[in-house]
Image 1 (cartoon, rainbow, N blue to C red):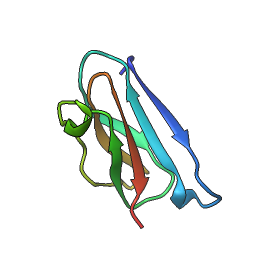
Image 2 (spheres, rainbow, N blue to C red):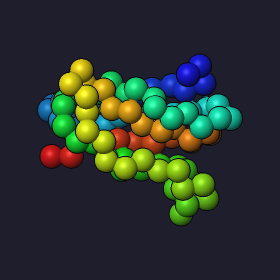
Image 3 (cartoon, rainbow, N blue to C red):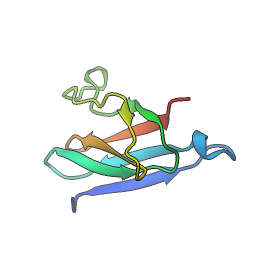
Image 4 (spheres, rainbow, N blue to C red):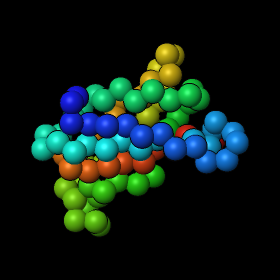
Length: 88
């Protein structure tokens, strides 16, 4: 996915408070993007610039279970970014 970048930002001292930001600067939607996470469990999208209320197309992600290898698969709509957080 040459037009998609990943940025990880940590909040607080606990890794469970990390947020993961996926940015897609390309003109095509990316599905099945493998996003590495440090903590197993369920993640949800807490913000998407592609949300209808922000003028996007509404291609939002739902909650995802992580794989055993610490990866969640997400969609990255074209020209958008999304923020994911661990569900405690």
